[in-house]
Length: 271
Ligand SMILES: [Ca+2]
Image (tube, rainbow, N blue to C red; front, side, top):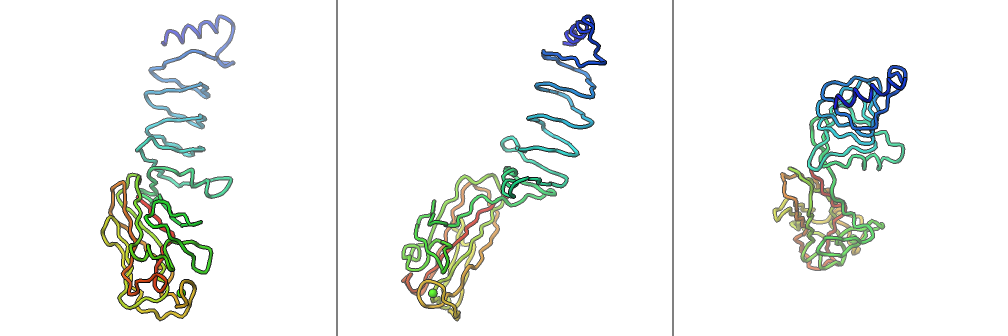
């Protein structure tokens, strides 16, 4: 191929074009096996099997590299190959002109590592807004003084008697899982009454609000609430691509119109 370069160059010289003063356009493939040094290089595609060293800017619609080192990297999209990881060793500045949510969508990666530490990645958030209960085995929802909808609650007998279960399938590759939720203890709870959560059939959280001495009635029956929005936040070693989550309670009264529970903002994060 070096011979072809020489031929093109010779043709240009013959027609009076001096490479030193005007650009030379080569509309053919050129393979350089040694070194090419240039102030400016324009090409439809650039494939290098060795290394590329650029003193100033690289402009490209797409750069593919096993390792890319740059003082400044400006890009609309940063994406790993399937199963690969993006590692940013310097500061990460998200200069999004619009809302912060688009800056977050820019960071849709399999794994997010800052300073060598993997970061939590939220993969599910069930807020039950508008009564959406997708994937849960009970579909009873209610509200508590506001329009904020949660799963279960006052007079919802199926949830009170058998609990609520959801299988979160298709989780990305991970070694830890974080499960968060807000739990409501509604109306009259007795000493010893116990709410719980299970992950993959193991108890991971229990809470006993004790006999109700509260004075604020917000929802359900006229009895004050034992507790609202008690935060469950647990971290577990976990690597399976599916997780089964259960909520339930052992309650003195077997009537959800007298004693009940609800759960809201169920979040599953992995890292
Ligand atoms: Ca009440």
